[in-house]
Amino acid sequence: MPFPAKFPTYPTKGHCVDYLDAYYVSKFGLEPQFNQTRKSAYDHHTLGSWRVKTVGLEEISYLSRWLVVATGENLEAVVSVIEGMNDFEGPVLHTSSYKNGEEFSGKNVLVVGCGSRRMEI
Image (cartoon, rainbow, N blue to C red; front, side, top):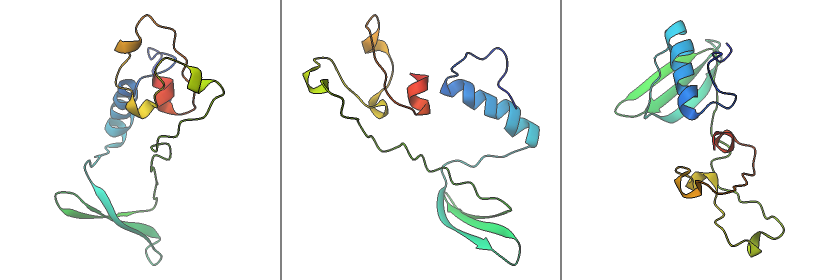
């Protein structure tokens, strides 16, 4: 389902959360579970589905035809080495350290990378 026409070219995290809530959670009656840690996941061949157990406040078991693994492959901070970077006198930081743009207001900034967090910045 496409983003609403009112969304900016580069939606923020907030836009994406609103979009998921309005267009998927509501439309398909999803009930997201938060603060859960995967305890196990295995293919239950006889049922033709996956059995996933999670632990949070309690242990929950799910049975589903599909298993989506979204582990955040870019979570680990990897700062590329760029020629001349060591001579640069300004701040160099990874997006994992970025909180807001206040300290960069009115300054020229170069953002290098490919992840969604970089696009949000």
